[in-house]
Image 1: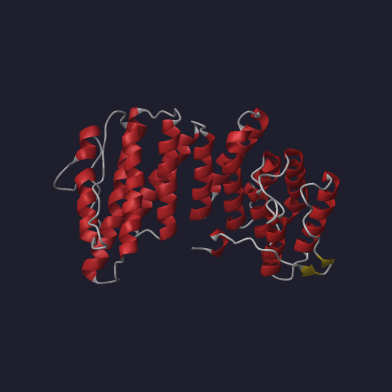
Image 2: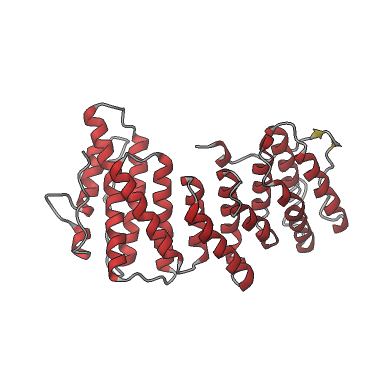
Length: 346
């Protein structure tokens, strides 16, 4: 998995940069007037960070200010508000910096504030075509965390929704787009169902041509989960779109399993238990799309053999039981007669 998706452990770090020693984070009982100068000083230090490790250390120091070891509970609302506002103000200009991990650490910091004061910085980063996929990933992740709080603020919510729609439509990184779809799900905004469906269909079509990478599978899972969630929140699909969604879901369930069986048979690679589990989990996510489209109906994927003994053939057999095969239509076709059994991978 790419380095920018890793979780980081927060630790006390003394940061030395061109501007000198970083200030210690202000205590919660300090006047809020000291927060702005502290955050500005840290932003200046990060901009001049000589390495990615130095930039990360500065971010750690700031994040630790939200939860110092000696403090308990949560910071006072006014203190937290000033802290988030200052982070958004002084670190927003850094998100386009590409050297030494500055832009990436700046957007992670802003996202980690989990505060609506940061919406402008997150939306700006999301829509910046010159930013890296990593920055757009974290911008989407940050937005997903505050969208429920933005809903009661119509102008801000609309701006976030519009930014997500535009960014997702042109995003080429599977991981960044997957995070945008998760943010779409968090909006509960019914029109996003069309984009989730389009992505689901596109990933199914791509799977038909080539074995999916783990990143492709994550995008497929995110699109399935977004569509399922949006339907649960009230989005509706017409008959043609519902059939198309069920077809894409069936294909996404089947193709990864077929590729694993083919790889095992051709001995082109060793199929691991982890690959089988990942394909099974994706099939579970895709199947939820079908059940969301058929209220009152229950479709379940049988469990894989226990003890790590499952084979690719076991996986495909379980999937075929739901999706049908070329010779034997099955449960999905009972609900959606126009859905064809997934094509056979050659």
